[in-house]
Length: 78
Image (cartoon, rainbow, N blue to C red; front, side, top):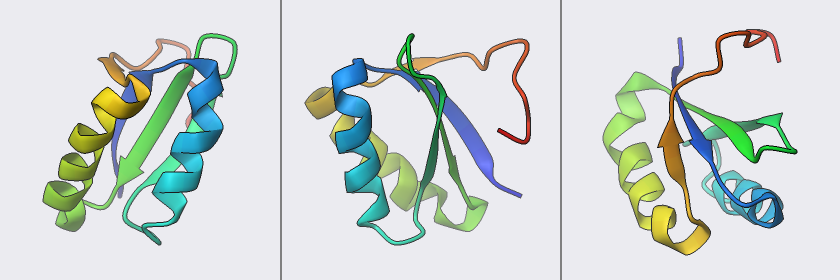
C-alpha cells in the first residue's frame, strides 16, 4: 500500500514535476487530482519514505510545493 501526500503547486509546474519524479524510476508516483487548482497526489512505498520525503523537500522550493490535506470527495481510483 502506498503512503500518500497532497500538494498544491502552480499549474505550469505540474508537467515539470511529473518529469522529475518519473526520472527517479519508481521512487514516487504522482497523479493530478485537480489540474485547475494545481492539486496533486504523490504516493510512495513506506520502505522508500525517507528517500521520497528528501526528494520532495528538495523540490518544494524549486516548484513551490505546498502541502495540503486530501480533498474530501477524492476518487480513490483516480
